Amino acid sequence: MGVSPRNIPLDLILSDLHSNLHALRAVLRFARRRAIRRFVLLGDLVGYGAHPNQLLDKVRELRPRFMVRGNHDKVCAGLEPDGSFSLPAHMAADWTREKLRQDNWRFLADLPVGPQWVGDDYQIAHGSPVDEDAYLLHMREIGQAFDAFQGPLCFFGHTHLPGCFELDEAQGRLNWICLDPGVWFEMQPHCRYLVNPGSVGQPRDRDPRVSFMTFDPRRKRLRLHRIEYDVKGAAKAILEAGLHRTLAERLSQGI
Image (cartoon, rainbow, N blue to C red; front, side, top):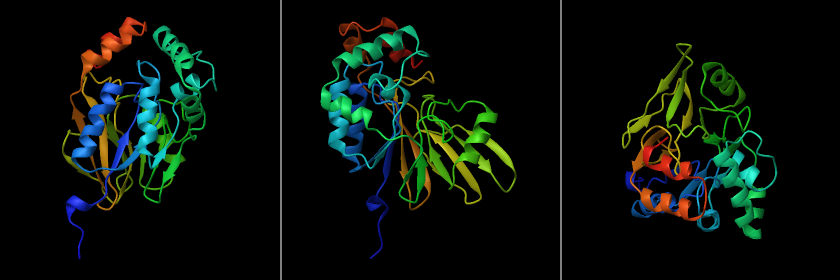
């Protein structure tokens, strides 16, 4: 008997949750409605937001298929200093470190370093397959990133900007593809891809909606999703926690 499209297992690709419990709840409602149970996380679970323990509890309940750590995860776990952080990020990291329960601190500290393979299908990284803290924004770094990983596909986060770099090996051309939400994007057999699902907890493309992706490993296609969530509730929680006002204000602006 063939497998119907509705029964094909999908991977839900999430990045940069940043302690935003309100945003994660919206994603989990989406996943429940579609019976998606395979979660892949690209790092930065904490930082910025007001609910680090509650969010990590939810993540641990999900038993994600694969995860890698982000730079905020390392800093909040005390594994690295926060010398490159802005003042709001520094304040949030200090606050998060003080609030974390011991079990959640250990969970963060034990997150694996990227890149990691997800089965035989694709790789994941936080910043880049070259350097977990690198931002993939400029063509030189993107070319180096393609050289650093094997296989057709690597998902990455860190920039909070959804979209797709496509290396057309037949044409020798590197393209940036702005994905349309809700539309399946079909991977081409002669191309390789670096794909960013955007940020769940703090979108920065001037769209405040939660950003994430589903990936269909069998059909080699992916889809960007943008959904509404309780932005006001998340911002209110940040202010009530005494975190920097900027972290609350930027949520409604998507910056």
